[in-house]
Image (cartoon, rainbow, N blue to C red; front, top):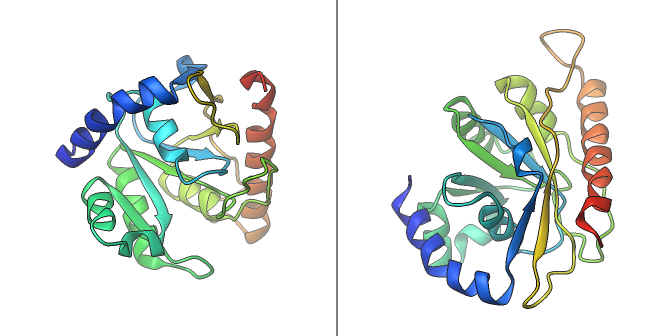
Length: 198
């Protein structure tokens, strides 16, 4: 395990445990080995809620917007902890290669298919990046739902959906197939919302 990830997890854990404890729902759904974790996005703290819901046993890598990686000190810590930036609105070949490397090595990658935050809790349209990564690496997609409201001193649910492998007609998916997979992914994430109890 990455030592920076381990230290950050241990340092922040007491505060999360006291102020905004996390409860993982359907943790039994979580697969062994590499997987692409896809969650709705409402707050910058969402990766922390996923990390604490899964536990220290499951280190996650996170695809974050490029701007965050240039913040003084914080950007360095994030990079050393396994988080990497992606340039939004363009085909970032470097970020794609990094993501594929983690997935092919059997590691966990968290990404937010919508590509931006929806702080009101609504769901946006998914980009096709997750569809492309899953079909090219052969790893399962794990849909995850995170409520927009993170409550103080009460358990905050993170709902884990059933892992699945997106289907395509051939070895080279078409743009239409990528779009269909992306749309289906958001349907699966939204379907988890009732299990959060909010």
